[in-house]
Amino acid sequence: MSAEKPLALRCSNLHRYLGQGEGRVHVLRGVSFEARGGDVYAIVGPSGCGKSTLLYLLGLLDQPDGGEIEIAGRRMSNTDDAVRTAARGEHIGFVFQFHFLMLEFSALENVMMPMRKLGQLTPPQMEERARSLLSSVGLGEKTHRLGTQLSGGEQQRVAVARALANQPSIILADEPTGNLDVKNSALVFDLLTRLAKENGQAVILVTHNPEIANRCDFVRPMRDGLFV
Image (cartoon, rainbow, N blue to C red; front, side, top):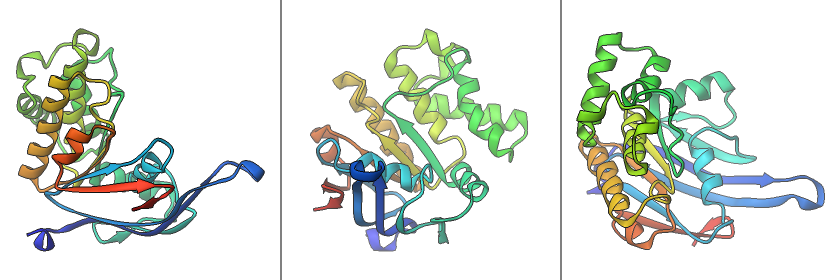
């Protein structure tokens, strides 16, 4: 019953241009989209169609040239950097194709980093939550392993735990299984979607993998800067 689920994110008529002068490209051409808690959305389409650009706008990492973005009922487009940074820390978790772990830190320290930044928990509470999240992704025995001592699949599972650290209402994933073999791809996708559904989070993922897209609740194909 998707209509009864809370609205996590909405964007309307988003436009984004990249480049200058004659090289200026109209990457997003009026994209509208909404995501509800507990649902998993796949954005699919050929390279260069605007998928990642849209994800960066929804994650408040970039500003649209036109249109509006609303997160948790608050208008976010054209707000200042401090407001956007605070909203990102509170509402949004990211999982990228390249996990972007701090490899010289342990799995535990990597998962605690977003919590330290948000500053709402005491150090013992942060550690307890990080241990719980690492257990939930099957790495309870490897909390003190450095990033360099983990396999690619394990590193991506740490990245999933880190994305969930601040209990965000939205998880944005850009090709989260793009660097993994079939077994680890399925494992990471299953983890991400199971944990998000348990926590009522909206998951929006960009993927080229049709098997993963077909397992999402909603598939939104993109072409030439628009949903088709």
